[in-house]
Amino acid sequence: MKKKIITFSCLLLISSLAAFFFGACDKDTDCYVEVTVIDQDTNLPISGAFVKIDIDNSYVNAEGYTNANGRFDAVFKAPAIFNVVATYETGYDEIYTPEDWFCYREGHNTIRLKEGEVVKTTVIVESTVHQVMRTK
Image (cartoon, rainbow, N blue to C red; front, side, top):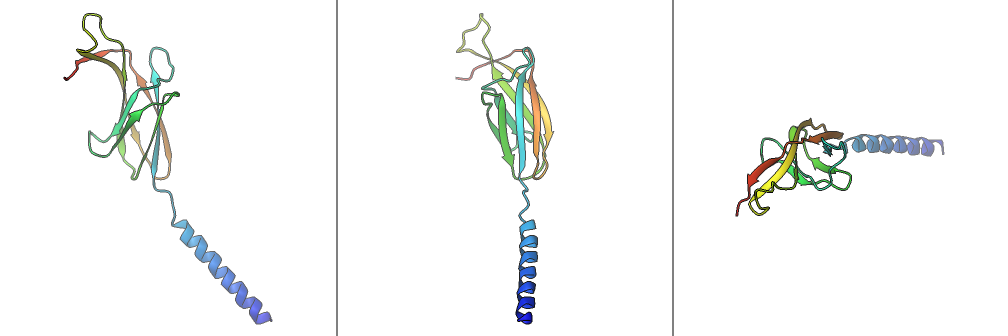
C-alpha cells in the first residue's frame, strides 16, 4: 500500500512539473498598441481620424479609423519601432470646391513595441490645415 502511495505521489509530482514547464513556453509574444488621437485646438479625442502605423512605408503596417473615443488599436507579431501618423479631414477653403481639394490636419509620433506588452501612445493633431489636390 505504501509503495502505491509513493508511486502515485511521484507520478503526480512529475505531471505537475511537466505541466508547469510546458505551460511556461506559451508566453504571449504579440505586441499591442493603443493610439489615442487628440485635437490640439480642443484637447478632445478625435473620432474618425485615419491612423497609419508603419516602419518607413514598409509592408509591415496597420491602419484604420479611430473609434468614438478617438482610439485605434493594433497587434503586431514582433517588436519594432514604428511611425504613427494620424490624419483628420477638415473643411475646405471657400476658394476651391470640395471636389478639387482635400484639406486635412495631421499629427505624428513614434512608438517602440515590446513583446507581450501594451504600448499606449497619444498623437496630437496639429492646428495647421494642409491642402492637396484630389486625384481624379
